[in-house]
View 1: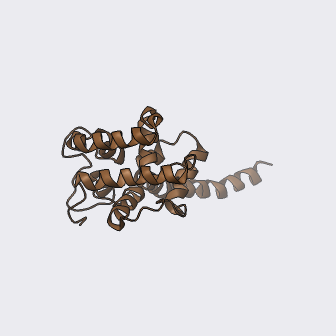
View 2 (view 1 turned 60 degrees about the horizontal axis):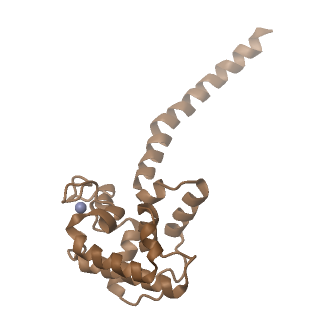
View 3 (view 1 turned 60 degrees about the vertical axis):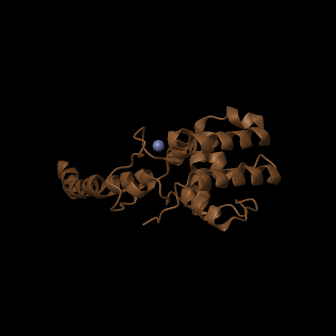
Amino acid sequence: MAYPILHETAILFPVFFVIQIILVTVFFPYTIKEWNKLDRFIMDSNSINIFRQNLLRIIKPVPNSIFGACDSQGVKLLTRLRLGLSHLREHKFRHGFNDTIDPFCPCTMEIESVSHFYLRCHQFDIQRLSLMNELFIINPNILQYDENSLTKLLLYGDNLFSYEMNSKIINASINYIKESKRFDDQLF
Ligand SMILES: [Zn+2]
C-alpha cells in the first residue's frame, strides 16, 4: 500500500525542488529589483488600492493631468519627476547611470528623493519659501498636508480640487522646479 505514495513523492519532490529553486534564484530577486525601482511615494502607499492608483498614474497617466500648464520645458521636467526618470540621484542611481555612484543628495542630508527635493533640501530653501507662499495663497490648508501627500499634490494635483486650483498648484510646482535650477544640466 505504501508503494504508490512513495512513487508519487518521488515524482513530486523534484518538481517542488525545482519550483523552490526558481522562486529563490529568479522570482524573488527579480521582484525585489523591480520593487526597488518604484518611487518612494508608491512604496509608501497605505493600502493596496492606493498603491494600485499610484502605480496606474505612472503606467496610464490621467488625461489633462498637467491642468493646462503651457510651459513645455517645465512640463517635461515635471513629467520626468513623475516617472522617476529625472536628474535626482535616487532616480539616476536606481537606473544605473554611470555618473551616479550613490543616491545621496550633494547636501549629504539624505537620499535625493522627490520629496527631499521639493520639501527638505536646504539648497533650495529660498525657492521653497516662494513655493509655500504660493500654496498658502491657493489654499492655506495645503500647508497642513503630511510630506507624502504634499509631494503627490505637487506632482499630480488633486482631483478633489477644482481645475483652476490644480492649475495653480501645478504651475507653482513647475516654477519651483525651474527656479531651483536643479535640472538645468544635461540628464546624461
Ligand atoms: Zn539635498
